Amino acid sequence: MKIALLRKLEQSLLERLNQETKAEIIDLSDQISPKALADTEIILGWNPAVLDALKLPNKIKWIQVWSAGVDYLPLETFDQNHLFLTTASGANSFNIAQQLLAYLLIEVRHLDLSIKNQTKKLWQLPAGQTELTQKTIALLGTGNIAQDLVKMLQPFGMKIIGVNTTGHEVAGFDQCFPISQLSEAIRDADFVVNSLPLTTKTKGIIDQAVFKALKNSSYYLTVGRGKTTNEADLIKTLANHEIAGAALDVFENEPLSENSPLWEMDNVLITPHSAGPSDFYDQRVVDSFLTNFQAYQETGIPSQHLINYQKEY
Ligand SMILES: NC(=O)C1=CN([C@@H]2O[C@H](COP(=O)(O)OP(=O)(O)OC[C@H]3O[C@@H](n4cnc5c(N)ncnc54)[C@H](O)[C@@H]3O)[C@@H](O)[C@H]2O)C=CC1
Ligand SMILES: O=C(O)C(=O)[C@H](O)COP(=O)(O)O
Image 1 (spheres, rainbow, N blue to C red):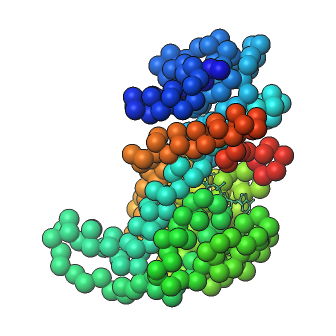
Image 2: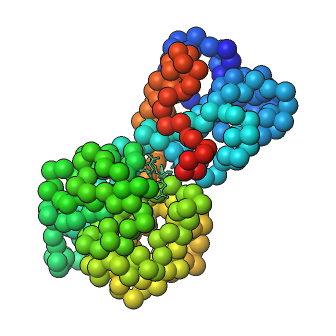
């Protein structure tokens, strides 16, 4: 069996792939070739040249991408070619949850003010410092990112609300709502965390009506995909102080334009789509690929985070 590798990996991970799959690993990370891709059964990573390979007579059965989001991929073509698609969801959720916890702590302890004051050598006690203790948090999306965050929030004694497609219960959440009851779900939230994938159903779903349902003291945090938020509505809401602030890792268009008013807003924390990367990332994706690979050999189907084209995406 041949596996094409489209991502530069450190030697120890390459060796693990070789040893544990006993497959022939074709490293195409430097020099991509549709013909070489067409001759492999599994593709690890993504490059648009895979589309050229799919037009040739080919042996491709399964693509494992290096991202959790699949919104940028030609899913219809994959579906038409009956390909399995697995993702890195779960491989970066632990570090994303840590970044979200950092945002939350920055907001309640007003650490952003002290960081700004330090550049001015200004000794000033921030007003209104509080804690996460007894606050209510609503997590939009109850998947890997949200579940890792929920585990980290347990010691703070918060009320944890989840929002997912059907309102199905998820361990660690006090209550889950279907997305059709979004306004009700977020009504009492001190923090709203958006880790929704971008799909036809979630595009622009967080708009003025949703912001209006929030308390003036609420914070909006987003790490999913920028296009799930109506950014113009968010800007208006922040400018009018209709919510207390926002921590934003993803934007409608990236990089965020230097003309965006978000840069200048005191109540906004901006990070450059940086929640995902971590030095543990490649290792965790390889771990998840190897688990998938074992299932693929035993049952013909890779097991973890398999995208079902007929459902959500
Ligand atoms: N900022 C960054 O660096 C990163 C961003 N992401 C983004 O975060 C997203 C989520 O990642 P994971 O938690 O790993 O994915 P996941 O697939 O484990 O969770 C997605 C959650 O969203 C829910 N969902 C999907 N469609 C919905 C809808 N229409 N209404 C309500 N809920 C819906 C699902 O039920 C599930 O609970 C990814 O799709 C990706 O776009 C992921 C990794 C890094
Ligand atoms: O996993 C995802 O989805 C992400 O957004 C990660 O940060 C990685 O994104 P890319 O750098 O692969 O676009």
